[in-house]
Structures are given as C-alpha cells and as structure tokens.
Image (cartoon, rainbow, N blue to C red):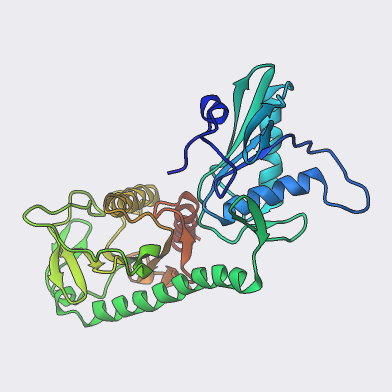
Length: 365
C-alpha cells in the first residue's frame, strides 16, 4: 500500500523518490524554456501521465531533495484553492483519456504549504499527454517512454475483454434458447400469471459482465461457500435463491430470472418482463431504478469476493416488439448490445443513462 505523504513522513525521510514518489522543487505552469524545449506545464503533465500508466503515486511539489529524500522546502504562498484548482484543470484538460480521482492536496509547512498531487491507480491505460502525444510510465525514480508494443498491448487488453464478452454473451443467449427450463416458465401479464407460455414472448433484459480477473490465473476460482452462501438481489425485488452448481459454474433461477456465475468470475443475467405496467405503460423510471439496484448488487457481490474490475459489460433488451399492446410498425425488436463497454464499476452512471435513454426512445419515439 502506498503511504500518503505527511510532513512528518517527508521530514523523517520515510518517503523517498522512486516508483511511487517524485519530489519537485517547483512547478511554474506558465514557465517557458528557450530553444523549443518542453514547457514546465508539459513536463508536469508528463510526470502525471507516467504515474497513471504505472501503479499510481504522489507528485510532491515544493520539496528539494538530496539523494532522493527531503532536504528542504520551497513553500508556496499563493491562494491555496486557486492553485489546487489550476493544477487540476491542467490535468483534466491535457490528458487522454480523462483521468479520474486525482486530488491536489496542500500540506502545511513553515512559510506556506507544499502540494501533494495524489494519483491513485487507474485502469484506462495507456494515458497520453495530449499536448505532445507522448506516453510515459514511471520506472523507479525516473519516467520512460512506453514502447510501441507496450502501447499496443494496453489497447489489445481492452479489445480482448470486449471480444471475449461478446463471445460468452452469444453463447449464453444460445443456451437460453435451448434451455427447457425457460420454455417451462409461466408468462406474466398485467393482471396475473398465465400458464402455457413458450418463454419467447415479451421483453427480456440480458446482462453480461466480464471482470479483468477472468484472465488472472493466480486467482482462486469461484466456489459456493458451504454451509452459508452469499445472496444477491433479484431484479424485481427480493433475493435470488442460493446458487446451485451447473455446467461451467453456478446459477440461480426464479420464474422470471436467471443468474449464471462462472467459476472464472464472469456473470450473465436474464430478466423476463423488466417493465412495470401497473400504470398501463412501461414505467421507464422504475426500470432505471431497478437496473441501478441490480447492478449495484452484482458489484457488491464481486467486490466482496475481491473482484475489483475493470469490467467489460453489455446490456441488451430483446423482444421489445413483443410487449403486448405496445408493438407498432417500425418498432425495434432490440436495443443495446452493439458493443461491450469497459468500465470501472458495473454500476457506471453514464453507461446506465445511455442504455435507459435507448430503451425510452425505442418504446416512445
């Protein structure tokens, strides 16, 4: 775990320059250098990019060092809030993709303050200095340029997650179609349950989640704990029954839902009739709330088991044109599932908002 810098840690030389720490005497974001050399602003961005492409760390401004440890302070005296906001604005406007959760924290010292630019580990690698197009990574006490193969490898990891989830998701769909249990399920209509449904009418929500740990051979495979088992919230309220063993993993199944958890940690879910018709029209707001709660439950389950992401995730609704009394000419039969998204959490707000917007347009446009 990376220690958070404090004045005591710095002055007692328990923090030294290396993979996770870098001391800077000063950073004047407006300073230019002659002869076409990089500006101070560009050099600062290079340093932040290097930590982002590494394992995170702390860039500490206002410290002179000797042999990699504290020697003295060069304190800042300008308005703290404005200075911190200026550094954050530079970071947010010059690095691609946009980094998140970076903080700029003032630390009191005699004569003023120093700055801790705190950079937690990020997963959307590789990060790039958009001012110069350069990719750096922190290597010990120095930065080095990422090689072309390393850059390609970062992009390939994302593409592999997307393609692998698409393959697993398609397989799950085929399994649902062939599953006799689905054909035996009963059909839900406003006003009650109707027996004899073949399992193919009405809207169906499908969710696929593939975490990075799917590829981690050192991670223990998922096994249902005995005698107790963790519970996960069902889409329409309540809880799934306990997971039971099946081919390739475990599943929980109810009359209108099925959840599959593979031993290598990917998740697939099938939810039948995800819309509330109690108001004689699909309640999109209730659908969004249910979806957020459901994805949060899946995230909590994965997090409790040490699965931290990033995640490839796909959301799709099929059979929209099969909703009784809502089918119309030109209505799409399916929304979503065009391409998996790679996100930091299954409950990614932008992902959910975009998907719900697609559903709303399909039903009401």
